[in-house]
Length: 320
Image (tube, rainbow, N blue to C red; front, side, top):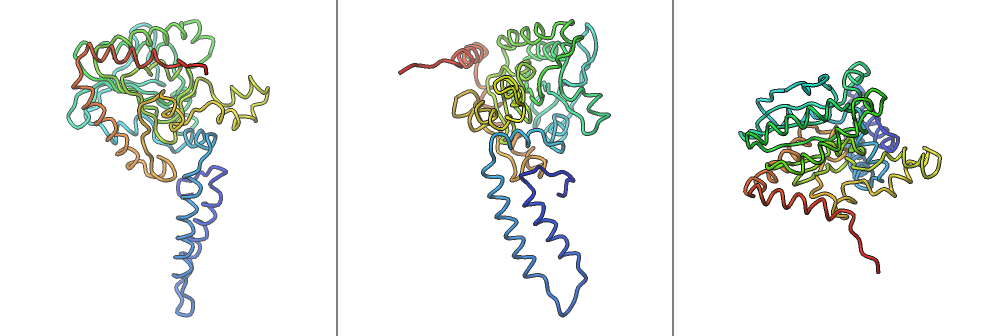
């Protein structure tokens, strides 16, 4: 494919794209006119894309969420924000490169933005720890959020992590306590908070910056208590059962919206955000602006009451 990477279910599309490119590369000839053949293949390609991308399974959406060309937090900042000033460190241990934060403007609205950041290649992924934050990352995030609340600035949180880093050092420095502290403190910040899951929304690593007045999930992102592979390993003792686990977990934006666990599904370009990054950024920016404008009209007291009610009702059920 044009981006140099294709998922298994995209092979029919890749084959058609290759055929079209081959025909376009043939030398011009008066006796052979390939325009009609190319047009037929292009129509077939458009139909194939609709059939494949409009009927993705939950597991296929997980694969899309993990696509190595998918836009990350810094990409969306560059496409949607201006005047971004990154702030570093937790004032206790270190600066976690897997969770970034700073002040920016969204069409002139001053705000704070925090988000997970992955890398594009091996070197950058090691630098960013594959988007899995340490305790100091979550402590940095809440430090910045508390500063934003002091200056009455709204907060945006971009979630994109397979999970919080589970290493011994992270546990020794209080990984679980750092996440729990963030959950409590975010629930009481008297400013608008919007959470957007832009890729992977894995377990407590996502929840560490996931408490907000509005929770948005992009069309091909997922939000889950555990990864499909982890769930399959526990339930079936076989990680190969991940596709079945993904379907059972109800982790897609559509499922989460139907269950009332999120507030909005943000659409993506056909084929995923990596196909048309700027278009994906435009969809996300529009959703952020609309929700931000609505939340800024609500008093701090009502924001806190609504936020508490929002999360307290999750998990309630009735028996027939």
